[in-house]
Image (cartoon, rainbow, N blue to C red; front, side):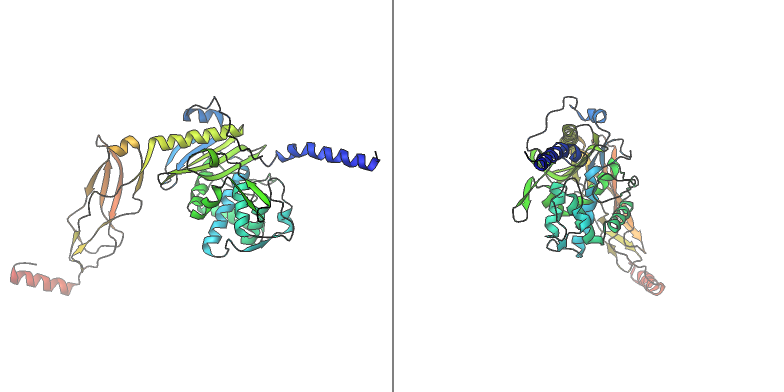
Length: 401
């Protein structure tokens, strides 16, 4: 055989042998089969023994149902892309970007390793397909291309990621890139912070159309996309959200699922195997759906009007303040009682949003579970002294106010 051909064959074989080891540092392989059972994970109590950190959150109220090392700062791998997708969704909702916007791939984006859709420098792809590639296939090149489209450069986009993290109260987080690839700079977050940004991302309804995809394609069907989040295929109601893996971060997952209008978020970090993270997330989500219920705690009837003494309006119609949803154990929800505390009259002036009373929520034994403010929807000014004098005079003359 020709020496040059022999050398070529040797180098090709070597590259194929090395590829899995190199790829393992920053990407996962799609597997269409369910994950294997993990005998050591039989209940929620076992989660803390098998993963580095975990959090279980209800999306609408933000109520935390479980936490383990919730604020330990760990590497998140590609779960980082939850913040990337959040900023892209905010750009889409804000109108600075549309799903049809054509994005030209830069040399920097095309040079990303790990999971990718193999964008070429100068290749043009619509933002919707790029977002789908990030959500489904965790494509690093697509994430960077979107970052550049939103902010001009990945560096500026990362600055926005950290700024947005601060706004969301993600005190444990510092991002160094938009992909989660290993970085020389600090790139750390926590299970709690991932739950916060997952909750914010799920506030954008459009993202579920991408994160709930099992398999799809881009480039007119020429390039297939497959989701590494097995819950999308094998867990009822799964809405996403993002897997991640590097040697340092180990196996990570932010999983979300919705049933009967209630959505939970289970974050699992630093699991030793892929099966452990999926089984831990499944246990947490099962725990939430089995034991908890989101209740709309509206009063049993219309709230009575409140008389306003010496006000320009004689009555004000009170309303419940913000946050009428309450997460309760199903046993509590079944025996829930409501007690309204509301005065018959109040003196003017009344400010818009002023608390007028309370709706107390009690369990079957009379213990208070929560209380909701009953407020004035609008303000009522106090009558002027001249008008008050005339009212007093009329009362003296007629015997009634």
